Image 1 (spheres, rainbow, N blue to C red):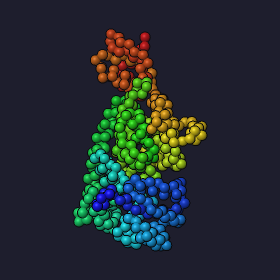
Image 2: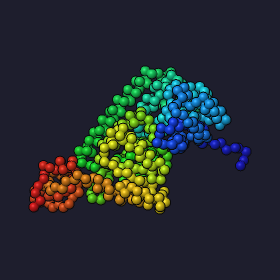
Image 3: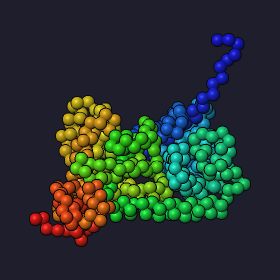
Image 4: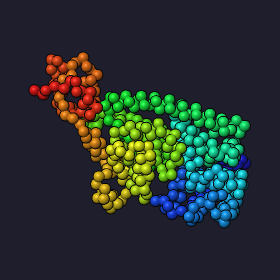
Length: 431
């Protein structure tokens, strides 16, 4: 080995203690919710060393957990040399401040909301994504400035979980006025970007392109499905919130109809309200869709609860009345009997493995069926000088038959309502 000891430079994971309170008022059991919190912590680079759970009818106003549990937490933090304590529910500013004082200022105390915001801060890649995350972070930080800000600024020097707030401003630079000013600027900038996105979305609407949005619980396999359908090359990783920024790709169905498919940010139970608000321009891709594919990890024991969480957020953003299809993904992880049972109990759903490609052809046929609902069969005569319109007919419609006449292209097509309205002036008799 020689005289010199190797110097290890890999970052040491922070030791985290998770704390949950079971109030018996959630569809998710406390164990399931804590399992998810642990996955979130691991995604953010932590090593979970202990999980503490207390049964209460309601949170304790001062410290969220009872005094006995607070003393136990202090002992655990010291004995396990924990760096961070993460609560499964959102803490009030005063609760967070009181808990920090009890466990010691060298240990961070954060909640699920702060943890999710921290992950989003790490994973946002585009300018719009970073602005959206920063807005949500500052909305979270604003009511906590008095008791929390100096703590977070101190933590910026050593990094780690919960330390990506505020984009590096020093404590002297940050006060309520500056944060309010920054929030106002971020909202204006995001409104400007939303207007630009709306122009692009309107152009797709006017063109008659059928729009499909992929939604689902985080890590359900939406990005893998987008890659399978369109060769999009989107980043895929087995972690929560691997991708935040929406990606839209065009593809052709077998019948010749062109559609767009958009991958969107993953959902999660207890998704912070400020994140839904901050990401409204991104989620607008969902509300503008003609069809929503709800992608579900069928191997997850909480699949039904995850569907309910997704439906709740769709309702919150006003997208609950858009036609949708549930797509059970990751069928390659089911055994033969489990898959047969799901197929028999959910005949209205689609079952695929985006990773292996099985079932994708059937899914595309279903999309084609949905896209064809309300189509009008019509015969049109398009003058030769309307070259762009001819191109749109071949790209946006299903051409039943066509022939070239002296006056132009005579075609019988199946057209969507939007395309039918566009083609109405050129409707002709099919002789």
